[in-house]
Length: 413
Image (cartoon, one colour):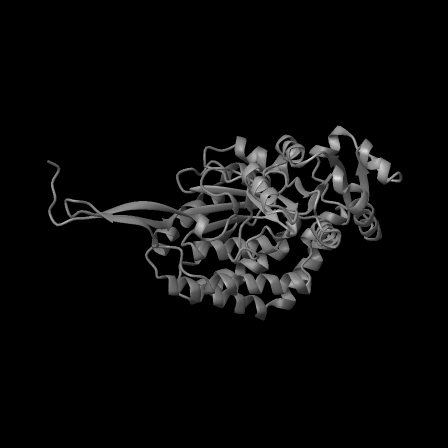
């Protein structure tokens, strides 16, 4: 497909120009993008309504991710503006020293180059990806799912126009306007032009992309997130945190999927937590010990501990101490987000040290493990990789670095 290869080449050319432009210019483009989106608000909603009407057989969770509500639209605007206001990540001196020879050595942050975003459903990823890419001086190629094509066309057209008005090459933002799956395969062959691929969607999509390209891929697999209620956890805090972690939005990657309850706290805390969750319509699936306290819960299977529900379902297991809780997370977790509820500094520090996840939270909802709540502004996802970027991926994480040495005629002896 020549269209895809042309898009990739144009993105590469645009990225070469973009990296020479100032941070102020890029910030101006982001502010203008928010203004352009606001001006075409009704067009965005109309296009999104058409997308929803064209996909009546989608699951309710998928439709929620696809829908642009007033709240989601305001979120998109705010993320663009927040990205514009962030400090410029490009050109930061990450380290520096003057050698005995007088040679000044610096390691500085620079853009990666061209980012390809491949994602499903959520139209807000279209604006988030553009915001993060431009803020970090990268060109971006957007390949959303066919179910959101109409919405994405409107968003991309508005943002490209804003970029051009700010003096950026229009091709720093490009949308692959095709619903043909062959377009993705062709995109993954453009290793000469594309520097990084970021897939955002289900595990099968991410695995297929990682196995189908020689371009580096920033991966985000399951969000099997845990909260561990320690033996000393305050009941009222535990109830509030568990309910928010699970119910604030059940369909997102940092929603709670497994609750671990210390055996010493189960009789005191578990009935109150279960009652609050049941009132929210959450189905509880418990281990044998859990059923002693909650006889009405569904028996949990081994498969439940490895399932990202993205639905109002929560698996519950009673554990004997923090070591058993951490062992469960190590075996069944996805390295995304895990939390502990405790008043003990010792238990909190042991959990932080022992749980190998991108985000570890103490006495906070798992729903807070995102870019906005970490002060990063817009992000393009949450990486469960260990190399380069881990956790929320914002503008700073879409920079690499280069070494610069400044001398006055030094020679190697």
